[in-house]
Length: 544
Ligand SMILES: O=P(O)(O)OC[C@H]1O[C@](O)(CO)[C@@H](O)[C@@H]1O
Image (cartoon, rainbow, N blue to C red):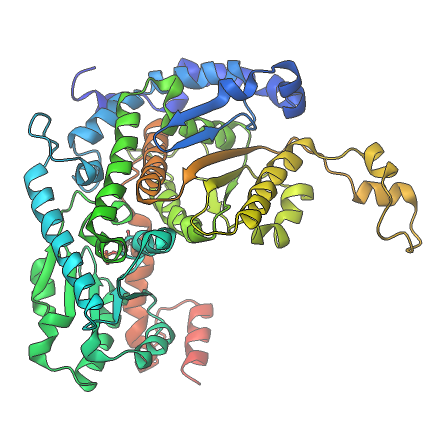
């Protein structure tokens, strides 16, 4: 394909492969059963286990087979996902509605004069300065000058760093305490500040645009608190640092020390940029570089692996099949690692802000559903909350288990329990329990006067519920980087398949505009032109 081929790709529903999938769907849905699929094919696991940098993905417990995969792989070819991917990685303006590239991969490319990545000089100049600064902050913490770092940001300027700092806490030593403030609800920042000492605290103000209401409001509160609690204007420069593409606005706020990045870094893809400063403060420069290297390894896997073994592409194809042909409306991500507790929150923005669209690149309505709702919680906690519905509810939810073979703690017996729980759940979802089996079991509610057949039906599991499992050797900076990059490329590939732009977010604008209209009305009480509900609630909120 020519270099412009990414623009002229057919939409998924206008390809022969789509028609092929439509023809396959009916018989597949009527006849497919995971238990039978494994019984019929002893090599199913080997065929559907994918090796990628730092992890293995078991896609064998998903609802698909060799024929469906052939059609899906054809779909990837016919929709030109490789041309899209190559254009993205080369810095073409794939974010068409904003006229921008989406070059987060350039942030993690190593310095290689033989193979220079786009923007390599500016990327590495900022990276070197950022990591030197992070090490200086760590040194100030170790010499007792700084106790706390408060990162103020929201959305992509919060979720990625917050996730990473927690995920990599087993690799953090000797740094200051890190706190995150995001919500415009001041309960968050006002609960934090009284426990800090102004002259021993560093505030990071992270905002790509440096105009975001929540971040600006929190930064103003932090600044006022700093000045009222022993800090003075001259000390501000030492205690406030900005991470932004809008250096002028940061300067106008009074921040003199900034690390910049570029408009081709989308907010939800920005943890690899200067926005990752708290990660570098937590795990040090070496750890941060290892995280970038892990992500880069996944970039190369995405760029170089043929479609049939390319993990981000396979995950995207499976997601499309599950959404558009099997009708699964949500997917549940379950990290069996407490340190990945924030992963579902990060993925909610990454997946739903990127793919929650209803028109394609040409502005035409999509032919079917786009993104599934992403949700989740760490295992094993989640087993004791919503797993009842996953096993016996009427809605089938594909689940993604994330297991980590080696822990960073020293309680091997508990880690074995954790892994056994994760493994047991994916197996139980698939195997289920028949009514006949349930009848043979002794019910724990034996004392209750209930017909044995009725009780057996309550204790029956249909099984055949799909899941995928990502298996990491250990959770360290490199594997974490690879894992997050995998999800980023899954999202981009889905955008390519559906023909939508995964790098803009126009859907967040309307609410912001209406907030700007309603904020002064809360003061004035003016309800002119408002709908009845909003007017009534506004009056109540004013205490009227
Ligand atoms: O970094 P900024 O400019 O403050 O934006 C924060 C977040 O707001 C959004 O624009 C949407 O609300 C996100 O895409 C972004 O990550």
